[in-house]
Image (cartoon, rainbow, N blue to C red):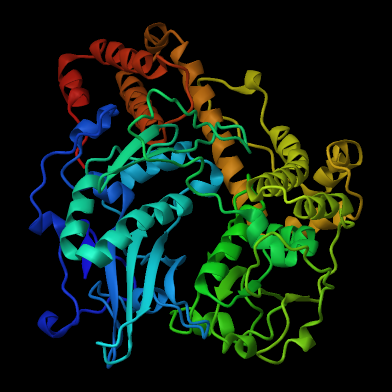
Length: 593
């Protein structure tokens, strides 16, 4: 059964021949549920134009219920078998009781979101790690309990939320409220949940939201790209929070210390591997541990955006299975989380393998583990550890290891341990990125070179040898105590997908800044005086170019000073009014699409 918004999940679409023969039913809330218009409270102007179910669609794509059929296996009517397999554990760990995990899969290339404009606005102000990709996330609440009345002897069912938003902590918290209610009261409570969600305000960065769901109120803040890294901007108010049941300090961060605890002697090497976009596979006993570890790896290079693919939970039924397991070419730049013992043999040729045992409570002191050679990973009962031939560029930081070990011995709270480790990764990444930011900023043309009557100047090219020269006096040694081959690490990084993605983003931002400065310079000109020296044809051409600039500024939301666009519109209108009436009529007509 799937509760869906107005669009479908793309890729691998399979239409069932007869819906009546399936194990579950499919309900489209837009067709089956009568809902009063949403009342989001403190709304932004564009929310006044949202239709019923637009708010739901800004948070979720659909809600799926996946049951296990003894003859068919996993069954769900969401028109894609991939979700079925990803919604159930495929390991031998048992997973009795309730288990939560997440997965990620590609959106079909021919699919476009019906709320593309909203996603663009959300993306513009979102921090790098929360920008929306062409992927969907699946957040799973799986229940397996003994039931002698069933032929298989077990009740097995998953409630799955499908969303474009990478709000892992938030959606797992949401499922802890929704899933137990669903398993007890079945379908009607999901319809009620959909009604609640469609009354929520849209998740625009910077907003503090109180979100009622099934009698519970969750308070969250959507982070922005302007937040100071490593801080929480959600301020608690005793008076204002009297009706709030749950306050989430973060919507997306996982507990780094708990995830890295089994291998925390190697955290610095793992940071390098993720930074360089190396192919990594995490072998774990359960989907919960595999997905959390993959998400922790991706987030350890924050605030840098991890630009390669990552799959928190990957199965043999994924459409990329052959692509990722072939031995005819090098493994792609991707991080996989797997649980099926079959992968120990299939992915044995991968260069870097992290093997996770059962995650212990952070009350025991972890044992020192050496990096193991890949040839030792031949059997299914291989011991936990990191299997790789990789030699880190940087010397090992013993201080952070001692600090975390001391915290374990002194029973320091897990939240404090997590904060220490997150701060360590943040400072390490910032030390690495600052020299790159400084060099790229030097590629920006001087503002005095911007002329309103010439095209905006171009950025100077990124020249690797020139950048390397800057590291001698302004390298990471200014902010990091770590020694080692920083030059080698940068050379390797400049060939990675993460550098490519970072530089593309910075280049786009700087190009938009040049466009904005050019537009502002144009608005300061006396256009009335200038057009007196030109023919009507040239003036019409100027009007058309100014209209193009205006459209570009609105479309790309260029970072311009307040009042610039209204000033440009006034300039355009004044120039049009100086033309003959027949041309005025033509230029005042709205453009036809």
